[in-house]
Image 1 (cartoon, rainbow, N blue to C red):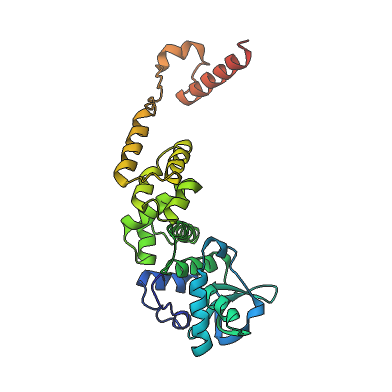
Image 2 (cartoon, one colour):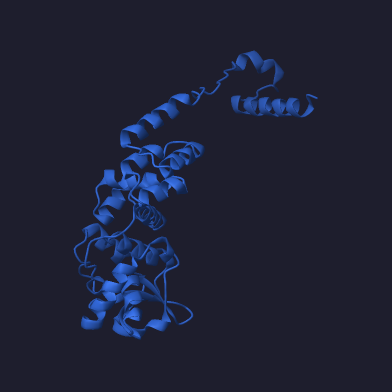
Length: 289
């Protein structure tokens, strides 16, 4: 579903979903619990943004260009919405088109309406269409992949896979998705640096393993003009790993049943013996003062 020309009209009819993977097509058809209405003009005043739309930026330059195009050619592709209990509609795909249409002076916009679509299914459609945008930021990709994974897991559609499942849905390769997923472990300062192009995704992936305080110090160095390459970031990660205390193996105490049998009731089983030992230790802990 992350491909270009996402064709929800055909999807609603049970055929294809634009130039996207078969996995994405099957997922959408699985998630659609309700039905669709024929493409129809909806009043722009009746449309609400998806609750997570603020997580994706919209370039004013792109909106301006699209608005001029709409003035000449109209809206060529319907937006996708779902009906809400209050009688309004929530935009799932087409936030840029609806914003540009308002700017162009339109009062209505052609819309494909999904009826009775649950929140998780709506979230899936929303994120996979945003992941297909050319101008998406690295932080937005990281968040989008995370949400697609969450929905697939909630719907029981992972089939024992995680990153591979996202790859099938979005058309990205597994290693690329893994790198973007690591961005979700960054502090805001480093994540902002990635979005500004001051830190590569690969270098950021290495830095994502650093403790929060170290990440904040690295972000400050970047803000002061220092360039952090992937090699430098890897060295920081290795140094931090060496500085961490080695994990101590758990202490395992073995007690032979025969050595404590005289303290236990006659005919006590090994399971009962364990319970008696735990009770004795709890008594000692509570009364050792």
